[in-house]
Amino acid sequence: MKIARITQFFPPKIGGLEFHAFELTKRHARDGAEVHVFTTSGPVPALPAGAVVHRIRPVRGLPSTSLRALLFWIKALPAVVGEHRRRAFDVIHAHGDFVDAALLGWLGRLLRVPTVITMHGGLSKHWAYRMVAGGAFSLPDHVVAVSTQIKKDLVELGVPAERITVRSSGFDPELFQGQGVKGLSLKGACPLIVSVGRLHPVKGFDVLLQAASKMVARGSCFRLIIVGTGPEEKRLKAMAAPLPNVLFLGERPKDEIAALLRAAEIFVLASVELPGQREGLPTALLEAMAAGRPCVITSKVAASELVVHGENAWIVPAGSPEALAEALLYLLESSERRVALGAKAKASVDRYDWDTVAEEIMRIYQGLVR
Image 1 (tube, one colour):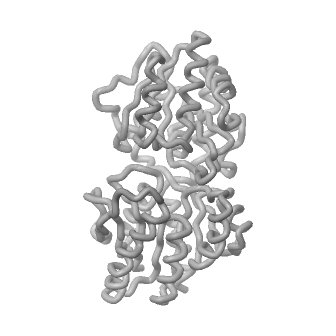
Image 2 (cartoon, rainbow, N blue to C red):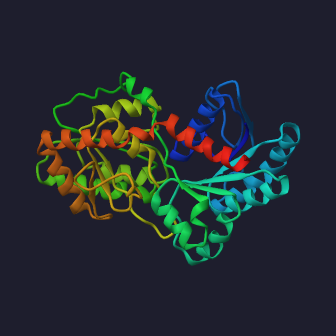
Image 3 (cartoon, one colour):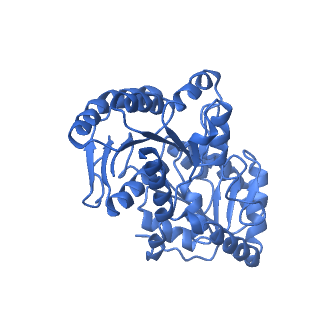
């Protein structure tokens, strides 16, 4: 199998989409496929011998994500076509949104190669987006949606349900063998709460900090560690300045994040919904559940196929600091509650390891090739 993977972002850039594309590439190449990745990122971490990375020089300084995607594809298309003439790709797999889907579909028809696109985030509800997205996502031969909610949105826009597979990101069991976090002691007198994600408004970190303030006012003893960077970093740090025991760690390697999750008493994800952006199924949530952590998430995390309120996670209304604070305090009150919720969370994600995910995606490729 010769695979072309087109993704604007790839490690060392840190994010759910980036690691999803990387883990699929690593496992498919390890299992004998020839994988060519076309991306702006570099230098790329070590990959098996069957994987080749073609770096596309990025276009910087553009405010529009759609315009950045379009210009990336304009620069990537000649490289993909040139490699196809030399390699004869069996399938082309892209990661992105409606711009990527439209250009991927056109490219597949031009080269007569089956195409797959993975949609990692929720679809925008903006009217202009919805006018073009249905047609764009109908062009590739198959769509992989990382949550059932994304599939529902695509079907509502006219994409045939039989051409959509729901397959989330995964987790690497080997990550949880790490030892700790450099320069940081994870032991302390107060329970540790951890949140991981890009410091972007959709992640709701401002709501989390407001909840933390309410918890402090009620005399709760806890430590809050936030992992990630992003455009909200300066504002969030200013919000957190009056609060005790709140620490921003910036970007950290995956093994250190896994060590943080293992040490945490609670993992929290305070995501909200914005007019142009919604959550998919965050990799950080999968990893926290795989680590056996009790997870508090909001109703805007598109994880309905994975979590059940009160069974393997605790779900609160999005955008409500009061509800989030109450849920965290409720779990902090009882180690028995936390242990029971974490054990059920761990049992829920057995089929979400990366090997299983990669095998399912390979079966999609094989079906399209046949």
